[in-house]
Length: 138
Length: 291
Image (cartoon, rainbow over all chains, first blue to last red):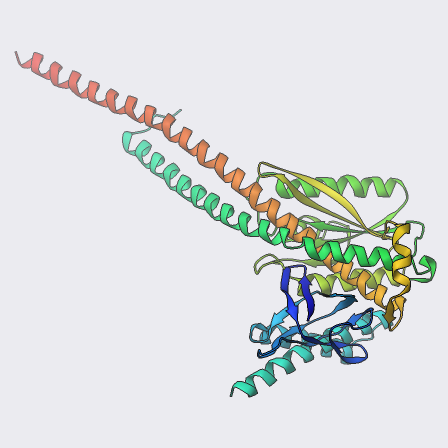
């Protein structure tokens, strides 16, 4: 068991002792158990799964951020964290459409392309997580 | 003043009373929104502390010159982010920001610098649009839902991009900030170039760290989060101050309306008495004439 904190500019989303945390990083999913090596890396949009012994795992959806593993404490610093059923499908669809349109139709600089790629990935990921959750319930 | 009938005066008093009812309601609404905004502002603290700590730690370990977001260049082109409210009726809230912006633009121009504007809030857009200023982008109607990171991270990405592409050499942001509930101040902050505080004691701590994929990439991600967050905070600060300013303005308006009602009630009483007196004189005259 170790202490996990999930922090966004809107406040502390989660703060408790946990058994395992799984986050999505640029190198794929990373599971963190107790005594994980010290690491600092980028978090990309995806699911955050928190496991506690003898309990159903808790799931969140995150956008871009970083995860800082320091000894007995893990901090996830993300821009936005959503409870899965609070994802705004309409907003994400709008973001996705805007990004796709820009990427297809306009001549973009390298930086602009990267920005819209990121926006597209974020919207796609959140929509996918929302869709999966709906299937599970249905 | 043209002579008003008692009925006209009564109507006028009723009108002022209606206005007072509206200003009173607006004051109550602003007070509630102010509390909410203050909570939102407080909630940013744990995030900002951790973010600054990480940026400072990492910035010490990378070559500033090599990192596009940390480069310091001669300030020739300046981006100026103007944060106002979408709505008025808040005293000098919006005009304070606009005045400060005009003053700074003037000064930058005298120094031979080129200024581009990024406008947040309808009041800024209304003022600066189509007046010969260079406007990079403009955003209206941004406070309707709660201020959120989805919006600021889109704008933040544009600003970071302009800095990397050397379209701008320095970025400033101007917004109102609440000091006490009764007063706010217009403040200008520098967003870029970022100047991390170097803390030599911490350098050793980072050596045992495993930073993936590279320090530079994590730092870049953090710096982008930093600018998105700064915009977010400026907006939250501004909306907190806006609600306080509107509360104050509406409080004054309610009080002024109360005074106006008192004044007009005195006028009304005088007019009524006058008409009663004239009527009495008429009756007495008539009675005397009959005798």
